[in-house]
Image 1 (cartoon, one colour):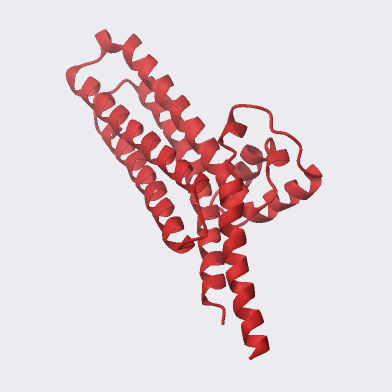
Image 2 (cartoon, one colour; image 1 turned 180 degrees about the vertical axis):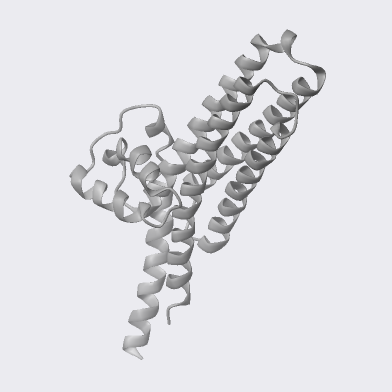
Length: 215
């Protein structure tokens, strides 16, 4: 009985630690400023490299997160930073495409302008969903951790769907080849970063599930 109680307590503590780490790990500002050094960066870099092995684009994962190693102590903070980087990149991509569309508006045909407009709308939706997911991960608490992570996964998945929709809007339309290439390049980078962030969040979900199910 004592061993059972200890194991159960360990599971509860692990869930609580995960929630607290997520709550304390809000480092969205790290995407816009140099992070403060919390620990030996070599330890953080090792965590980044090991965690990025589970992602779809591991090299991009390491490159995009290594600059913020000083703000990362836990897998939860790693996922937080990955979301922040995705959001920053999505906002930047939306701004670039908006400016380009404005410059070329007079030279675009009606169908091309409509396709770019629809694409920008879905890009805006993707930004909103990434922002919601980042806000949610920053307000995690120890109650029903798995449900909270599930909601975050839903938002990030929706952002990826919006990115795919934008790419589809460009297919088969009378859009200038240069414009199409620029838009696709930006959307592809956003999609890759977001897929990596989702993979890191999925790892948190697995950890939370294991902790909750432990006897």
